[in-house]
Image (cartoon, rainbow, N blue to C red):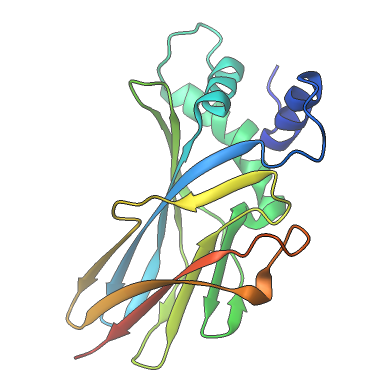
Length: 198
């Protein structure tokens, strides 16, 4: 029977007798790809790769034949039962323009894949449209402030920026202490995206 991502994780870890205070339970490696066209940031392509254990749970619940492949129907099942529910958590996606928080848009073009090693990856597009200039900085991060899920940017090419129609872009990483969570013990890391017409 299909279960929502969050509900399944809670049930599974309760059955495993893992103490409720033990966090996190799910680990996700994150990559973000961004296109800037004529100074307009068109959106963010997010790539999430799950740990081995949770990948196994996703497949067990959505691949009853055990084929280990994600077909169109299995992709739709994963989206319905494991991804769409995350709307209640803004898809763990956090955006700012300078110091102003902006809403997380509904994702588009969801696609799940599985590696030869069995790790499941989500790919989806967040249509955040922001006009940038030399004084406007776009901030992006992915984190779960309940700390049930630990998310971190990958080390190799964590952010990929494509610039079309001129200008140049760069990024840096910085912690945002104003958003510290889990009793003040975890500070999220944001990627700061800068664009200049020069």
